[in-house]
Image (cartoon, rainbow, N blue to C red):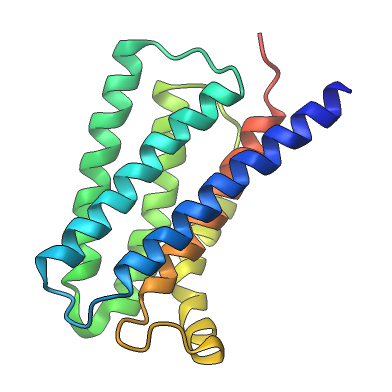
Length: 179
């Protein structure tokens, strides 16, 4: 029964990240011009929401959160995401190469900061770098095959990143022994 309970928590938490990715993809995919204020605001809100959802999932998995450590985690993670988002957004013709680097670094910094400030989660550094980069590596074939958001094909990167990194986070979180 206890294992079944963990499976429900696992699937529920993974669905939260998938739904966030779909909402982010849809809201980001509505704009052609990548320099518009609504696009920037939606992209930032997407990343900030991901950060807060990690705390929600931590609560689902009974991780003890202290106010001070949570505050540090949120402040540093939101700052890191904002910087990486703007580097990707304004990288021009180098967006694929820069996007691979920023999405990899974003995934790595998320796990590193979570481990440092929230809980001692165990993860593979190399695997998380690879998983983070998949959002920009896979967006071309996926957007071509499914013809999603031709006006802004990078919208699919939000779904891929949120789902893959969120899934790996939940996988690592579910392996922790609760105190």
